[in-house]
Amino acid sequence: MNIDEIFDHTSFTIDREPHIVLDNQVCVGCDNRGCTNSCPAHCYTWSEADQKMTFVYDGCLECGTCYVVCHRNAFTLWRYPRGGYGVAYRMT
Amino acid sequence: MSKTFQAIVVGAGPAGSSAALTVARAGLDVALVERGSFPGEKNMFGGVLHRLPSLEEIFPDFWDRAPLERHIMKKGVTFMTGDSSFNTIIEAGNFDKPPYNGYTIFRPRFDNWLAQEAVKAGATLITSATVDELVYKNGKLAGVTLVGRQGELLAPVVIAADGVLSFIAKKAGLRQPTFDPGQMAVGVKALIDMPREMIDDRFGLVREQGFANEFVGCTAGVRGGGFLYTNYDSLSIGLVFHLASLRTSGKTPYDLLNEFMEQPQVAKMVRGGRLQEYSAHVIPEGGYNMIPELTGDGILVTGDAAALCNATGVNLEGINLASHSGVLAGKAVIEAHKANDFSKRGLETFRKLMNDSFVIKDLKTCRKAPHMLHNDRIYNEYPELVCSLMESIYRIEGMPKENMTKLFLKVAKKKVGLANLAADAFSAWRSL
Ligand SMILES: Cc1cc2nc3c(=O)[nH]c(=O)nc-3n(C[C@H](O)[C@H](O)[C@H](O)COP(=O)(O)OP(=O)(O)OC[C@H]3O[C@@H](n4cnc5c(N)ncnc54)[C@H](O)[C@@H]3O)c2cc1C
Ligand code: SF4
Ligand code: SF4
Image (cartoon, rainbow over all chains, first blue to last red; front, top):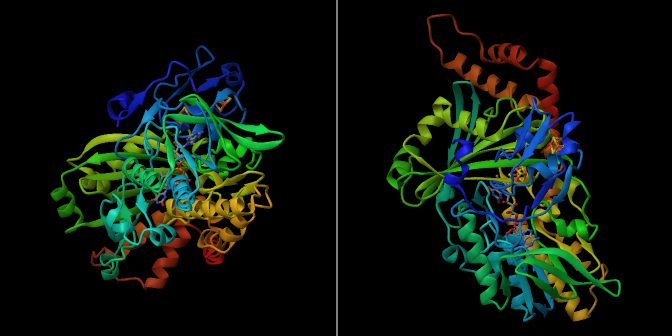
C-alpha cells in the first residue's frame, strides 16, 4: 500500500470547492502537528525548510481524524463535501 | 427544492435507515437524507455485523434477505511481537448454526439495501444532499438546508443519524463543541482481493463459514489493535489506533498497516492477494461517559452521532447499537406525532426506551473498558509476555524444566513487573 498511489485504489469525485480550509498560519506555531502523521491519506505536509504547512484535500477520506486531532482549531472551514462529491467507496 | 415532511432523518447509515423505516411503517411522511450519491458510499467499518434484535422483529426473515458475506464460525485473538505470535482460536459448533452470531458485510451494499427497505416502507430517500444548517422558525426547529442537491426540507422533528462527528448534534447544542482525542480512535483498512478457494483452504473454512481475528501488539507501541476478517472472495485487514496515542507517536497509519501486513505470520495470510480499496474512519470509543444529550427540542440523536459504540477490546459493536437506537428514536417520533408535542419533553420516550435497552445497559456495564484500554502495557508488554512464555513452554533443549508458576512469574517480572501485573489484573477484573 503506497499512500502516494491512493487514487489507484480508492475513487473520488473531487469538488472544486474545498470542504476543509486550513489557516496554515496557525500551524506555524504548532507544538504538535499531529495531523501530519495521523491523517490516513497524507493530506498534511509540513516543510521544516520553508516553515510552511501544505494541505491538499483531493485524497481526503472524510475520516474525521484531523478534526479531532487538531488542538488549535486551525480550520476556517471543516465540513463534509457537498452532496455527491468526495470519496466513493465501492466494496469496503 | 422546498418540501414539507412529518420527520427528517439526517444520514442513511444503519441508524438513519432503521429510524426512517420505523417511522415510515407507521404511515408518517419521512425524508431520509444522505450526502453520498447512494447510501453506504461514504461508509467503512471492520467489519462484523452482529445480531440486530430490533430489525429482526421488523423483518422475521431479515438474515435471509440482507446482503451478507460469510457467517463468523471461527474467532481468534493473536498476541504479536516482532516476528513471534501466539494465537487462540475458538471454533464453536454453535457458531455454525443459525441464528448465526455475526456476518461480514460490505457497507456500500448493506447500507444501500437497508435504505431501500425504508423506501419500500414509504420513506423518501434524498441522496447527494449534505445537510448544512438547521432551520428555526419562531424559535422552534423547523427543518434543514441542503448543499449539493440544493434546497430546504421542513418538518417538526429531526433525527440526527449523521455519524461520529455529528455536526447536526453540534449545531443543536447537544454534543460537546470539540472532541477529546482520548475518546476517539481511527481505523484504516485494506480490502484485499483473493480467490474464494484460497481463503477457504488458508483459513480452514467450508461452505459459507467465515473467520474473524483480532490482533494485539501489532501497532508498534501505539495504543490500538488489528483485525482480519474473511469475506467471500476478499479479506478485510486493518488497524485501529487511539488518537491521543497516534497523534504524539510520529507514526503514520499507512506505514503501520504496511508493517502489519509484512509481519511474517500476517504476510502468509495475505500472500497472493491484491489491494482493492483503502479506507479510513473515526470511531467514538469513549463509551458510556461520552454519550451526549440524546434529545433536544425537535431533535433526537442516534448511533455514532450519540457515541453509541461499544469497544471492549475483543469486539467492536456499533452497527447493532446504531440500528437499535434508530428504531427507538423512530418509535419516539411516532409517539410525539400522536401527542403533537415535539419539545424535549415530548421526545422523552426515546430516553426511556434507550435506558431500558441493551444499548445503554451494555455501555453502562462496560463503562470502565475505555479506561482499561488506555493502559500502554496491553499493547507492548503483555503481547511480549504471552509470546515469550509460550516460547519457553514449547522450547525443549535438554535443560531441566522449570515449574510453570515459577516460569510465569519469572517472565512476568522481567516483562511487566509484578506490581503492574497485580494492578492490571485488578483493573481488568473491575472493568468486567
Ligand atoms: C474501522 C472501523 C471498524 C468497525 N468495526 C465494526 C464492527 O466490526 N462491527 C460493528 O458493529 N461496528 C463496527 N464499527 C462501528 C460502526 O461502523 C458504526 O458504529 C456504525 O456505522 C454507526 O452507524 P451510524 O448509522 O450511526 O453512522 P454511519 O454509519 O457513520 O452513517 C452516517 C451516515 O450519515 C451520512 N451523513 C453524515 N453527515 C451528513 C450530512 N450532514 N448530511 C447528509 N448525510 C450525512 C453519512 O454519509 C453516512 O451515510 C467500526 C467502525 C470503524 C470505523
Ligand atoms: S495540529 Fe492543527 S494547528 Fe497543528 S499543524 Fe496540524 S492543523 Fe495545524
Ligand atoms: S478527514 Fe481524514 S483523510 Fe481527510 S484530511 Fe482529515 S485526517 Fe486526512
